[in-house]
Length: 132
Image (cartoon, rainbow, N blue to C red; front, side):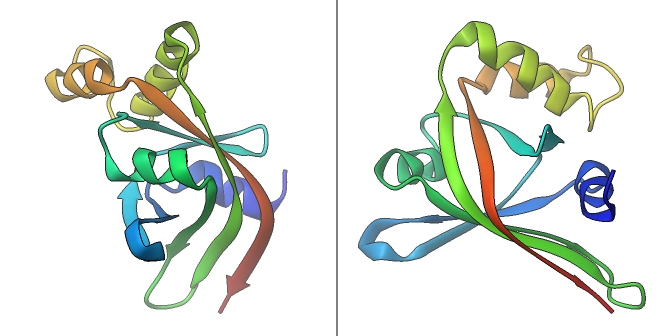
């Protein structure tokens, strides 16, 4: 596994940029899961990021760490697809949430799971890595 893949699997926050109204960037920190060279984000169709993707599925993202050495980051551009089939959403949403909670019995995990009605699937097309 490459250093880039290991980094994306280990980190916890991804900054997702979509194109909003008037073609302005909309950037949000999100929880995610990196698997099989794709990024998966649990979401709700009411959110601005999902509404933006419905209109324009081109996205950018950034995952980084460090203020002091080592400073490392992965930035990319790609295409986002919305997974809307409940039988596909639930298993992915659980895997994402279990990165952040010890179990699905946690009250917040349950609430987030119940509020997740779509998965944003990102297929990175261009990746840039930096290290200092």
